[in-house]
Length: 320
Image 1 (spheres, helix red, strand yellow):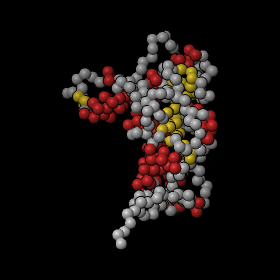
Image 2 (image 1 turned 90 degrees about the vertical axis):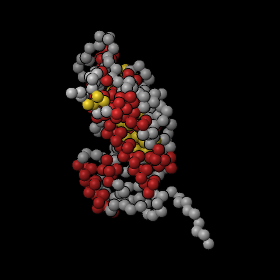
Image 3 (image 1 turned 120 degrees about the horizontal axis):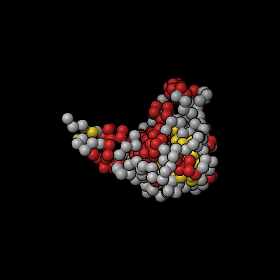
Image 4 (image 1 turned 90 degrees about the horizontal axis):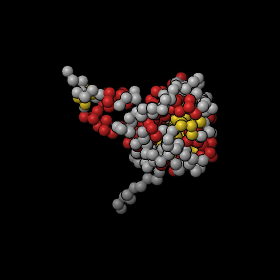
């Protein structure tokens, strides 16, 4: 009996670093599996290590390791899997229109002072594992053929300031970015998911992207916030788990900002949960080890949306 291959099976193969060659020739692919293969190959195909005689690195790896050890580390099975994960997240960002052109960037810490990151001038929807770069925490490139993203300094500042930061993601989700352009922090106490997984989202003042100043202004906020809006620019998030979790925060933030925007057009004051209800969510959050600037606040301080002002409503005047 021929094996049926579903889209979920294809996703599993890609996450394991395998290619379409792993699917037997007589297998039957579902339509969704065919679509996924068409969209994910060859850009998500694993690039095998060049036949250069590279051996596994000797001992713990760091930015001061020999170049031969860094090159070998760059092509280990572990990093090849992380490259595939980054390409997968980049594709999902692009497909959801969270990035345009070559915008957005992703990074993941792979050693105490080393990070894997996306290249510059490459669409996140069409990255290949071979495009990725290895950098130290000062931004110096240690491996990779393409040049690292110019905005890596912001990601590295987050990792230096927040030891728990394993992975970071930056993109320009339209509704969240609209809040950043308007200089309006999203209100709180409205939807449980954002309260548990993100919380209050501050806005870092605008600075030229890619500059140390931009990175430091964002990093000043990551001790108590895992997601930050960047004035007139976009959003960045960090995760203590993996790159997919960092990306999840972008989906949660964008869905929330879009919902708030839509709700504000309905002509009625938005309803919020009460402080006691938010306190229950913060207890869940604290047990999950997720930071929040509101831990320890009194209940009367928890749902403070005094600065929130919905946009101006347009209405047709009544006929006299």
